[in-house]
Image (cartoon, rainbow, N blue to C red):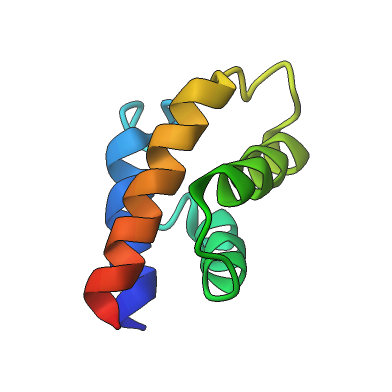
Length: 88
């Protein structure tokens, strides 16, 4: 649960689709966050995690809506890895 909260903080701050900024409920990205946490628990490599994060959001929102660059996704993956280490 602690890792979920930490990852949620990263993803909500990032707000990759801009939904939270438009007033979406605070649980808007919870499904994607749960998927990211499940993967992050098995991966310690930010590049590999970034591929998963990119796929999770593309699958959830489509490539026409999720338009973040892989470089931006890598920054988030790095932040998730840092939060994971803090929670261990």
